[in-house]
Image 1 (cartoon, one colour):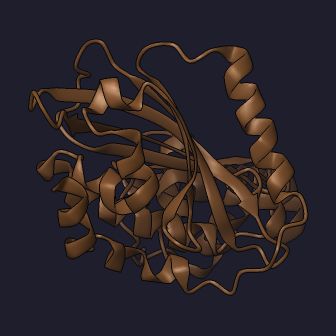
Image 2 (cartoon, helix red, strand yellow):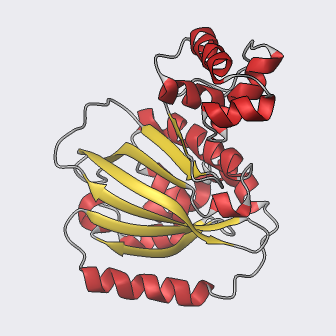
Image 3 (cartoon, one colour):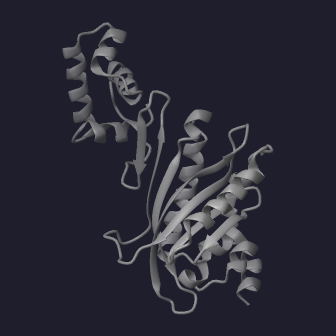
Length: 262
């Protein structure tokens, strides 16, 4: 009956139309990568409350699944293999689904702004609630995820989720998330649910130049040399940028800059 209902609804798949619309190219190592993942999962041993899953965005199905999925969720493994993403979202707590679907859009949009090198450093984390199919118990899980297969055109083909059941409820009350990636110069960009939405910020032309260079990981000395101004002047601009953005420190300033349009 559950599988029949899932076949009939397909109400969540529509949120992944952009993922399926990517112009996918073959990946020569795809089969080997999945085989290696299966071997690895057997070697490390599947402990209780530990799940590894890979979603394939070409068909919104599961490319790989292992672990204590039925004991944790109450859903038989074949349900996930049959309906992939549709089944996975169905078991999410209703109050978490809206933010989950919003986050998958954020992941897609942010991933496709990156260079191919940056895409390989992309990763995201989320914490959410599942509802056990039989007991209706609320189950908190956290997951670290990343692109597992990226094709030659930079398309996000298959992801990899390492999911762990939390024994105690976390401090947060609903779906939480963040993503990060490493820029070419080694700077790690981090964006979380609490990061301000994309917005236009009112900086002077010089401040915008400096803000972009800060985002690129340049030190004040480098910025001063590039703009032919003193380090002290750069410092003054940095203080004014902090004040304009209402940021408490440089780390918070970088988060805000990364989330804004100039």
